[in-house]
Amino acid sequence: MTAAARAAGREPASVTLTAVSKTQGSEAIDAALSAGLRVFGENRVQEAQGRWTERRPHLPDLELRLIGPLQSNKAEDAVALFDVIETLDREKLVGAIAAAQDKLGRAPRVLVQVNTGEEPQKAGVAPRDVDALIASARAAGLTVKGLMAIPPADEEPILHFALLAKIAARNGLSVLSMGMSGDYEAAIRLGATHVRVGSALFGERNPV
Image (cartoon, rainbow, N blue to C red; front, side, top):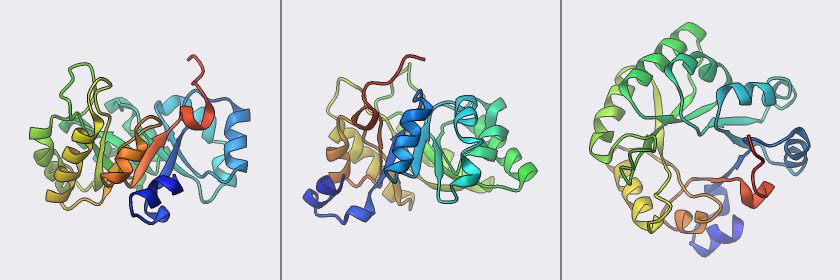
């Protein structure tokens, strides 16, 4: 990550590595923690609860990021556990997160997930609807910090990273969560502040 940032003419500290810990066992997680990693991405709320509830009190500098789709009925659990929710993508979820924040007195930072390729099977708001969703989330009291995207697997990711950066700039957002194990170098060149790396850290993920 440091080399990729420097190659892009950026300070290494401007890019945060999010270790994608979904499906990983205790041994792998403990090894990552021992290596100094403190920012972790999880796909499922319930799975993350099982993995981090006992560890969290002993890790004051831990940051947990929800990077998988969030169901509205899990919003309260997500707000209670995660420091960042990266997958806000619809109006119903805005209301659910806002209600959970009011109930718990806790407001995680939020990213809007953009379906840059408009793939029907993939979560995320369409690019044409992003500005309205950001405005709605801000009006509801959510702490919107940036955008997240997962480009189509069969397309050039640079075009999608550039689109995400453009949307973020016009909405005054500074955080871009984009780039994974196979394309994080390109993402960093296009301004990623957070890259989500799983297999490059842990190897191929275990079956669920």
